[in-house]
Length: 430
Image 1 (cartoon, helix red, strand yellow):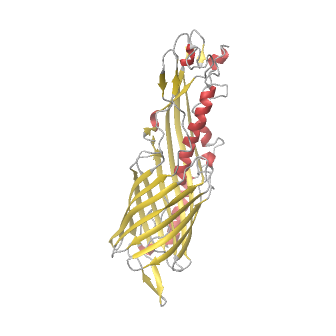
Image 2: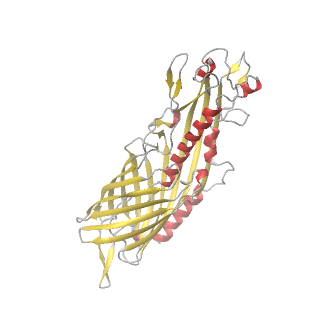
Image 3: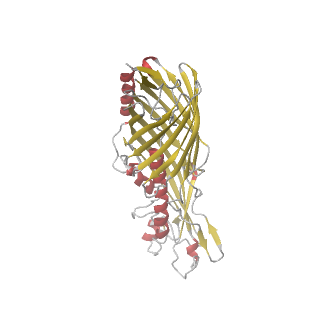
């Protein structure tokens, strides 16, 4: 009954998320937020083009260079957040080994939620489940996503200093309100091949939604205005706005897992785990990272009656062009507070290896009529170091099913983040 109930709920979640995919990919919708007018170019200055002033494409070089970095940064941040959505531990529930043909319990708590423990399931035992994770992003490197600012500068069209002629001091500001929401429904399955080896798979179904608007404002340095979106030289339109909304659903990045228990006593154990996340999610629709990633972990866990502390450390190797590798470190505990309830806490961290692979545009340096510097975005460039606090509980139900609830709060303002990530699910070991 427990298995049927688990998969019934999983099917309902998948159907609830399903919707026809729209023709335009979500990643291209980010580019739309920098496009105004009808000329088909970013920050199209229809007014300047139609007036025949020769100033219609003076911002194009800056926009294309800036767009490339910004779109890659935003697209990569969303894709990596989807691919890094919380995945339940590879084993759960009480674990057993066979001694003389009799199953002997090796853990009393229901286990951690995100971290890995050293114990494996045991020969012939199966762990299946489904969980749903909701993420709503509201900051990029600490800057609020409802008030992002991007600044584009004029090309150096005159003498080789920016600012001569005077109209080179013109800038275009783009303010953006970007709403991004992700719902991930993951189904996972692990089987104990032996008392010391588990293999498993996790299949996520992802729904990504974007609801965003942007407004561009030309800031002319002098008069008359040579750059404008519409109107005429004597009555120019210096402001333009656009908006986009869309969603996509589909399979995310599927993960295959292998866990080997190297040594286990009554109080202490160590295991190694390998996980490959395949690029099965559509990167253009922000359903996956677009590249294969490999996670390797060592899990050390102790057990003192109902209290089980653990520590995981390892390496996350990512093959994507704009994605950095990371050193992983997780520490926490799970505590069986009653026979039917377990609480689990973890500090989950990842430290970026190497420099950022996406370099955001440098500040604009004007030389004349006076030297000054203009920042090109409202959010700073930061390393993608992660530190999250995770707290959750498992509740044992009849039929061997556990109900899982978990919350994650970021402790560092890096990358694309929300205030809170909530996960709820069901799991069963039999």
